View 1 (cartoon, rainbow, N blue to C red):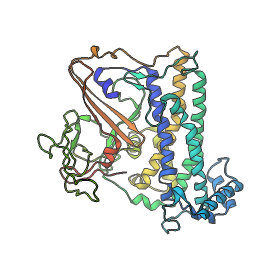
View 2 (cartoon, rainbow, N blue to C red):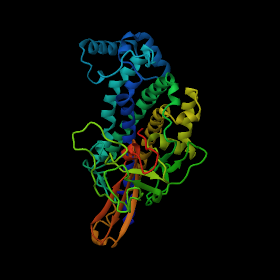
View 3 (cartoon, one colour):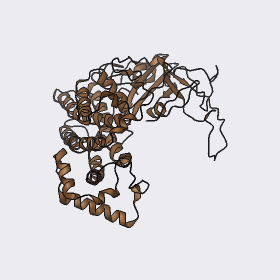
Length: 452
């Protein structure tokens, strides 16, 4: 979408920019909370240990770190009773495959019970707040209302079938609910858990290079650099300098991929010049193992200046922090102070967990600002949502090319597009999603893109 807008020189209306920011923003908030509680919380908390907790002490712990209303002793006793019934049944469902009682679990029983209680709460919470996505994008996570040139959802204060004052007020209430949970449950839980696992600041340093394409435009210019979360690169864990992003320096290798380049597989190519010529050389399925010294994947191996890069929440927060983003710096410094660790701890497993929480908080805080911008436009009679000047392919130039970046919740996405013959023929669309960047494999020479 942004790639085609870049190629054709399309400037989107202000309301389209705001709605895109809102959709991406609520995706960040919901996705990071789910990631913490429902995807990797069980790496840190022991469900069975919660049965040993004193509900009164659990209540005291919860009230010492937050004023969240669901923190009474009777509430935690009720949660404990439900957990006991689940354990006694022997049917643990999603909690079955864990190492309950393992000494690597460090949370005391009361902290475990508190976190376990917030597991179902987070499920109920996300079901409500993601209604913002439903109203603006129709579907989560793959919104259906994006159009080249803007958005398809109409704005009309006099229609119940369009965005109006009532729907914006409803979303404002949901945004407030999202922020309250993040401030009073997610962030306190994250800090409480992290305080018992500080040694994880020494693990997971990764490759040390971080790329953020930037997100949440503050204006409507094509490929604007005026982004709420800035674009940039951190090299070798050096926070003293943020390098600019030059998309022409992104290259791809197929040395270990089931593709081939005409010039040979040791050649690296920019996406505009890339080829997708299939060449499967792996064993006949089904198979148990792949020889990683040979070709072993359908993924290409992207590199920036021939270096592997990490993308995702940590990359975005590091670039924002090093770029002097005021609110990000405030929250990062506060988290580091509360945990009693230095900035070097950011380059770690613990740092990645913290980065998701930090990004969730600052993004949840911004949701009301974007909704206020939408309200202000409506009040002055600006209902524009789409620029259709280049909708007809006959208006396109004979040849055009463009690129567009997007920061999905878990990492960067890049599209490069080539348009030829002045027709609606898009001859090349290359997606460099966060999964490719995080799972990118070996290239021609030594070095790996690692999965984070």
